[in-house]
Image 1 (cartoon, one colour):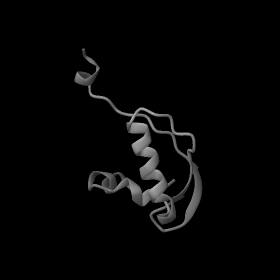
Image 2 (tube, one colour):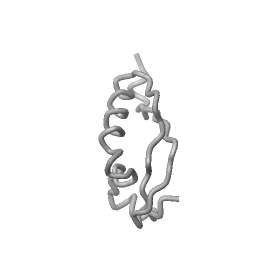
Image 3 (cartoon, helix red, strand yellow):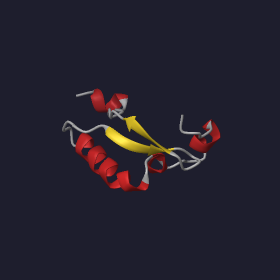
Image 4 (cartoon, helix red, strand yellow):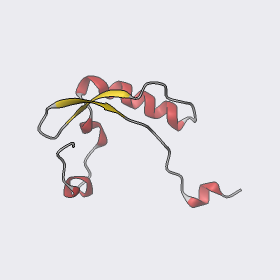
Length: 72
């Protein structure tokens, strides 16, 4: 959908490149809010493909926890 290859991801593709430039500040803010444990209300963004074309996208955030973080 985004036009990137697996090799792009392995080579360290920055996730912000998948959003239109005007959306990146909102995305960063919402990621920060989610990492603080709060709910993110707005999941609608303008995404950007590798070739520069844009499209509407719904994105949901979920933290990835290490097993050790789940232990008391």
